[in-house]
Length: 126
Image 1 (cartoon, rainbow, N blue to C red):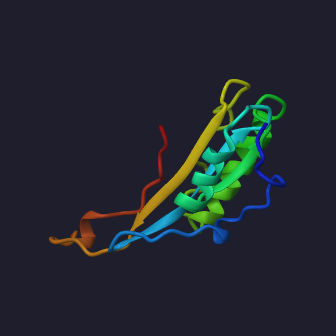
Image 2: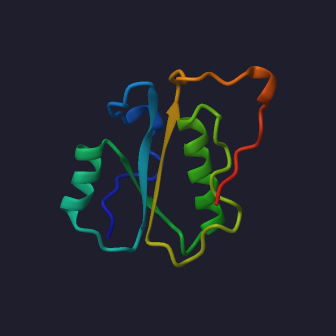
Image 3: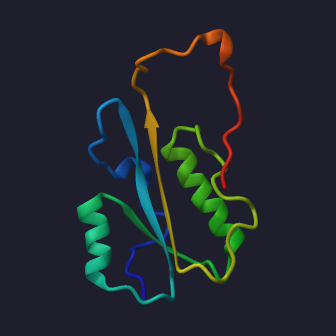
């Protein structure tokens, strides 16, 4: 069984890592099915080696609730840039582990875009 602590205790602000130059690394989180046996050293490596949060999840009992919880975490972690990573039917009873992370590029381009050719567009997921 997953020893992930209390569900919902990890916030994006509590996880940190060193981003590459010109980028902001959004914290990672690993969402593990509550009833799935995971080696303790794997969870330790995730937390300490990668600075990721580990969350126990109820994919089988409440997949829609887990989608909402993961999307909320991602929205907070990306400061609203990504607010709907998973669609409403993205999860069911089959997943054992879901990994979330993102990289936000805040650097400058070698050849800057001409602003007249750019516009805000929706973010799309697979």
